[in-house]
Amino acid sequence: MKALVLLLLAALLPAAELEIRVVYDNTSARPGVQEDWGFAAVVTFQGRRVLFDSGTKPDLFLENLGKLAVSPASIETAVISHEHGDHRNGIYRLWPQNPSIPVRFLDAFPPKAFEEAAAIGMRPLRVTVPEEIVPGVWTTGFVPGRPPEQSLLIETSKGLVMLTGCSHPGIVTLVETALRQRGKDSVYLLLGGFHLFQTPEADITAIAARLKELGVARIRPAHCSGDGAKAIFRRVFGEGFGEAGAGLVLSPLE
Ligand SMILES: [Zn+2]
Ligand SMILES: [Zn+2]
Image (cartoon, rainbow, N blue to C red; front, top):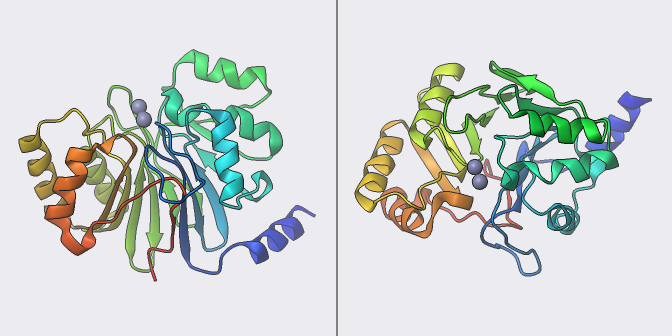
């Protein structure tokens, strides 16, 4: 029965190999989809749908999911990058609508994250090491930082696609970790929060140069990246630069 339901859902999902819908972001990319501080994205890869992060305000998160035509029933599994509420809050409201969603927290999340889950009957899986979540989609597992974080990696026909939450461990460290784990020498697309909104310009310029050196081809800074960093990345990456924003629907391999 479950296999049949999944087959039917797959038929309703986009045909592209990879589609990314940005559900929650500090800016809006589509009229009617409201921006707010936080991040969430839905990744559909080869017909399998993964939620990465879940925004700050649960009501707005669910509203934006609806506006992007993502039903809770179509989400197969969820990964929460780190403990902060602007990535974690929405999952507690979404999960009761589809309790078959396995939710991955880092084992290092504070007790309150697990207590809030227990209160609604949700038992998050505790991630430590890299894991393949659905075929071709990985979590980096625990990357040390304040706080520690996990990123999402997708092994596509065009190369590695990487989504980050807030990049508290540092965006360069996260990319280096991802390349080492997956045995790659380039990143086809990097999208997410890079946490550079308080970083001096000279440091951002050095980070942008290092990301180029690491083989990042396309970049879409979101969430806590900051306007200063966006301007620098636009200059450094040229054609490879793109905006993110809540409401963005992207088929990056096409
Ligand atoms: Zn954070
Ligand atoms: Zn954040």
